[in-house]
Length: 386
Image (cartoon, rainbow, N blue to C red; front, side):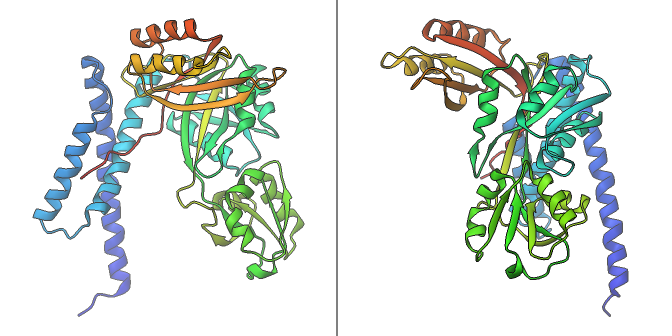
């Protein structure tokens, strides 16, 4: 006899609660792991160990005939591993930088509900700090608030997997004395947000930030006779659409932000790329110390001479010292036509002797060199499993 649907749901609820209890226990064990590594000074990540763990779990599930797909197991445990790594990382960073306050002011672009706002919340929550939100109308205003001590931190988007680098932020980094102190990735899930409209064909005006419009360009081209209204941020667009309350208009933004303004989702997954992620940076007045056990990045600002091969000579320094470069971005230098400023992101801690040696050599082959920040990466790349 088949079980009643209510009874089945009760069983599912009970199992889900048991899973939460086990996940909580596993999360707490991450603190025991990091205290042990604190003594041995081992790196937080052991990719070989992570690969072995996933392979053993897949084999165990097969031997026990659990009927779970290897991909399903891998995806679940990759998230569990990510939580463990970040938990350990935050533990070390908080001990190393005891000056961090429990209540922090964070400046971000847009109003409540913007992607920058959600990323700022994500950053503050991980450090278990109370977030005091400072909405800004421009990237420049974020820099100003941090510079003038009105904000402890500023969160800014640096690049997106669909639309690429955000040049305005890179240009502002040229002229600041602030330091990069962190980075994080936030998944971008654009959708069409409306008041009460049920028919997409009746929408003739879309409101959003230029970056969002660019990231959803294919979807927008599929619509007939749609007018675009650019806004300071996606949250401004959502607020405007909610206040106008017209049946022919819609905002492009995220579902969580839409709920804050009483908007409903008319269509989801409208971005050009399904795997749409924005990388955010965190800026502060003072640099933070970064544990040598943590996956660390450093962003450099450099110019070279106009001689042939000058940039190649600079990049060969990293090859010589076996330092991985993850980003090379060029931007024009104001007042110097046809000359470029280079941003180089490397996976290295500037306090390590090898990095210091590389920077010393780099100074000799560059015209100008500045460290914009050395910071822990909160982007945990999942391990590959055969």
